[in-house]
Image (cartoon, rainbow, N blue to C red; front, top):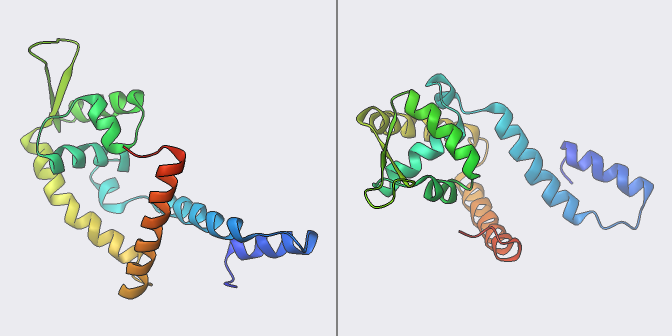
Length: 167
């Protein structure tokens, strides 16, 4: 067993309850700990540009789809709540990175798109962000990264099917 913090917790549980199956804790605990550490590390290129990961995800969704999106579509694309998207869009609009226009048929519907400044920012930041993420994972060789990615993909498909997280 590796000597990470989860291994320590598992050893403590096994000492208290030797017959306890800690397998799920070992996997889910490590996934949660990795996620927490990655969130703590933040995203240096994004932070330097004055963006949060969630704001960049909205900009990225608009860039990769290549079209205007409604706030509801952005919420689905980024797995965010409508209220969170609305707040982030306001910040991005105030920064001049996105523009909004009302739907011609239904004025209650807004269409959100990147401004030239927003598009340029995404195009500049994405390679920097990917390089940063590559450096975070640099302790793992390509085979390990690829295997882990595939295994996590399988887990994600299972969880999305079971827990209703699919788009």
